[in-house]
Length: 250
Image 1 (cartoon, rainbow, N blue to C red):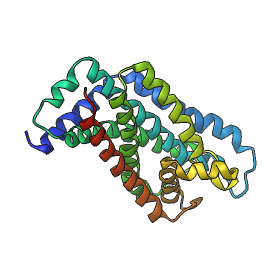
Image 2 (tube, one colour):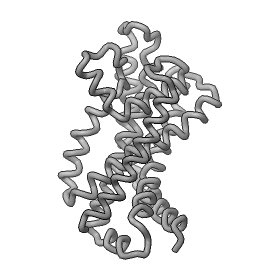
Image 3 (tube, rainbow, N blue to C red):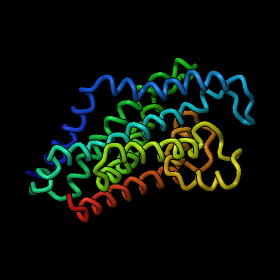
């Protein structure tokens, strides 16, 4: 089987498995929507320096939240595959570990990406009418973000055999990454220690890139720096996952 065919088969399996569980998709979209319409509306009355519409400001951050939560959660599929023996079948197949990781990562990233698009099309409901070109330009950034974040979940799943342990670590990672990314408040307003932690958070650069692309303002770094870091993070995580899968005995 060719590399392309192998990646496609693994990608298709991940996508089909996710979208067959409609309740899980609805549940995963509930949190971002609540943040956008309830938290965003509640904070709209407040005044944050330099921000004229708080709901619009957090909109790219809510997309980032959707990609983050959906991507890392998808890594649990590795534990399920190990538990039911499917992982052993994949590992004995004549395909490289990198091919396996790419297939699974792209499948999980596609699921998160599609959920991110659902949130993206809700922008008119908060009075944000995106230019079609801006919306289209945001899509590659969203997918690469999802790809890198998906590999975090895969990396955790490779080393863990317990669903409970995975969920514990996922909860430990999700909220700090989200809050430190500048998704709900400008990093310029954060204490120095939190601002430094925010710049270590890879989600920060994805959210910043989406703000620049979608809104045209509120950016803290040049777009090319954001995109470079997002791409480098995705490549790094794919490499780490491939290395971990080679070293880890299933």
